[in-house]
Length: 248
Image (cartoon, helix red, strand yellow):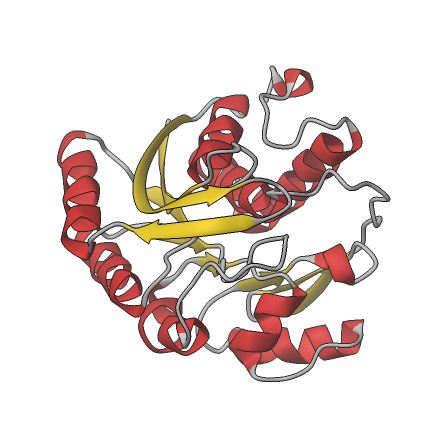
């Protein structure tokens, strides 16, 4: 069982590629990766970003897919319009099912992308995606509307969902996730009173892919990924191998 993460590198290990690989491993999935950008950051701040040339991102993806029978992948920080366009081409070329985590801003508030990323995702990537997993801030950018309530989030999900299935994660919605796959579903949860949330979006999307690889349907994968992340936050092990998931 194998999955691919196309994302940026966070040297602190809390988010990005390192987080994705740890999450894959915790859930029994062999993780591969294509790095889109190097960052200098920790949980509190980002001091620098060095994007990887687009042709080298492509070379990484091609060499992985040349050798391994991948069906599912996820994206994180894509950084530029050109990398978004590349990923869209590769989804079509390799017939991949891709979960898009539309990373644009770090938890510390620092920008992790060039301007115009939301529009580039709308134009090139969303219609080729299997699922997109924005938080409220990202859903606002993708839908072009303010989200101040669960009702607003439902309207945004309907708008984004014209392109692909979407789950708006509930960190700012009292812990509830809003899922749209042709029908609106509200997955009720609890808001975690914990500061150990750096990389939670990465963990959620990587866990969703992991459960899909294991053969679960999309709705079940989303629900189990939410449980995984909340237990990780509660136990203070987000971004680490979670011992309580040794049985997946």
